Length: 465
Ligand SMILES: *[C@@H]1O[C@H](CO)[C@@H](O)[C@H](O)[C@H]1NC(C)=O
Ligand SMILES: *[C@@H]1O[C@H](CO)[C@@H](O)[C@H](O)[C@H]1NC(C)=O
Ligand SMILES: *[C@@H]1O[C@H](CO)[C@@H](O)[C@H](O)[C@H]1NC(C)=O
Ligand SMILES: *[C@@H]1O[C@H](CO)[C@@H](O)[C@H](O)[C@H]1NC(C)=O
Ligand SMILES: *[C@@H]1O[C@H](CO)[C@@H](O)[C@H](O)[C@H]1NC(C)=O
Image 1 (cartoon, protein in one colour):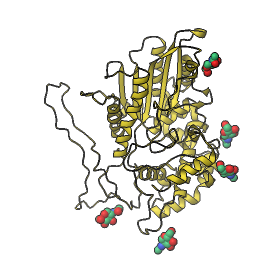
Image 2 (cartoon, helix red, strand yellow):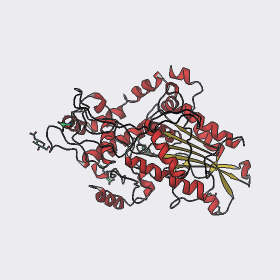
Image 3 (cartoon, rainbow, N blue to C red):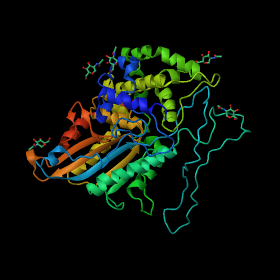
Image 4 (cartoon, rainbow, N blue to C red):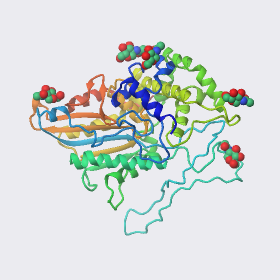
C-alpha cells in the first residue's frame, strides 16, 4: 500500500509511544490543521481490502481499525500488579463503533472508481421466535446496477453507502477473539457460552448490527443459536441521535458561529476550494465541515482504494498531503465538538446524556450489589463514542475511528480501603484514558459515576425545547 512506509517513518521521528498518537498536544489550535509537517501525527489511515488489520506498532491510532484490548498488550491495573490489593473483575461495560465500511458520502461530481461488495453478504431475514416454527431461507442483500434506470448513483459497483466491507467483517471477528482472550480466557468474566448475565444492544443501523454478528462470533466461535441484539424504537433511540431534540441543531449552529470555528474554516479555505472544484463538491454540506471529505477519503483508503481523482481530468487527484490536512481538520472539529466548544456541557447533554445515564445506572447497580449483568456490549457510532469521551474529560479527542472502543471495567477488592470496595478503570481503544481528571486507571467506582453525572440532563424534554 502506498504511504504506509512513509507513515511509520513519521512515527519514529516524532518519538511517540503508540498511545501518544491519541493525544496531539496542539489539537485545540488551528495551527494543528495548517501545519503540514504534523502529517497524521503518527496516525494510520490505510488498510487493504481484506482484514483483519491492526496498526503497527499495535496500539497506534488507526482510523481503519482502532486498537482494542488484546492479551498481548493487556496489563492488569498497577494496584493489582504491585500487590497492594487483591481484586477481581466483576463487570464490563463495553462500547464500540462499528467496523470499517464504505463511505456515507459519495462525491457529488461522481466517483472515479467503482466499489465492490460481492465479497460480503449483508443478511436480512425474519422468522418466528420459536425454533420449532418455519425457518426462513437465509437471504442476503445483493446490490446491483440496472442500465435501464435513468438515474445514476454517481458511483459504480455493488455496494450500498454505507455498508460494512469484508475487511470490516474480518476485523470484527478478530476484535471478538481478542476480547475473549482478555475478558474470557484471562480474566474469566465473559462466560464460555452466552448466558442471562450478558447483554447486547445496537443502534438501528445495519452497520452496527453487522459488526455485532462478526464480533460476537469471535467471542463464541462454536455457539449454535441466535442471540437478541437489543434496540430501542428508532424514533426514541438514545444512541445515534434517535429521539428528536431541536436543541441539538440549535446548539450545533451556535457552536458553529464562534470565532474559533470560523478560524478553522479560514485556515482551510484554499484546501476546501481546491477539493470543491476538483470533485464537484462545492455545496455547503461538503464545504461547511470536514465531515464529508474525510469520510469519503477514509472509506477509500481503509478498504484498499486510492484517493479520488476528478471525473473530468484523470490527472487531477487528491494527494495524500491534501487528505492529511482534511483528517487534521476533522480531528480538530471532533475535539472542538466534544471538548472545547463554549457549549460543550449542554451539547453532550442533549446528544448523549440519556445514554450516559443508562451507563451510570448499570454501574450504580454493580456498586449497590444489585447488578443482573456481568457484561454489556453496545454497538454504536462515532457520534456516540465522541460525547462519552468528552464526558470522561479525555485530554484531546481525535475523530473516534472505526471500531474505536471504550471498556468500563469494574473491579471488586476485598480490603475495603477508605470504605471503597469497587474500583473502576476506563480504557479507550486499549489504553487507560488520559483525562483532565487524571489517568482513568484505578479509582473508586463512585468517582467515575461522579465524573459522568453532570452530563445527564435532569429534564431532557424541557432541555430539548
Ligand atoms: C489548548 O490546550 C492547552 C493544554 O490544555 C491549553 O494550555 C491551551 O490554552 C489550549 N488552547 C486553546 C486555544 O484552547
Ligand atoms: C509544526 O509542527 C512541527 C512538528 O510538530 C513543529 O515542530 C513546528 O513547531 C510546528 N510549526 C508551527 C509554525 O507551529
Ligand atoms: C501500587 O499501586 C497503587 C496504584 O497505582 C498505588 O496507589 C500504591 O501506592 C502502589 N503500592 C506499592 C506498594 O507500590
Ligand atoms: C460507470 O460505468 C459506466 C459504464 O462503464 C460509465 O459509462 C460511467 O461513466 C461510470 N460512472 C462513473 C460515475 O464512474
Ligand atoms: C488536469 O489536471 C492537471 C493536474 O492538476 C493539470 O495540470 C491540468 O492542467 C488539467 N488539465 C485540464 C485540461 O484542465
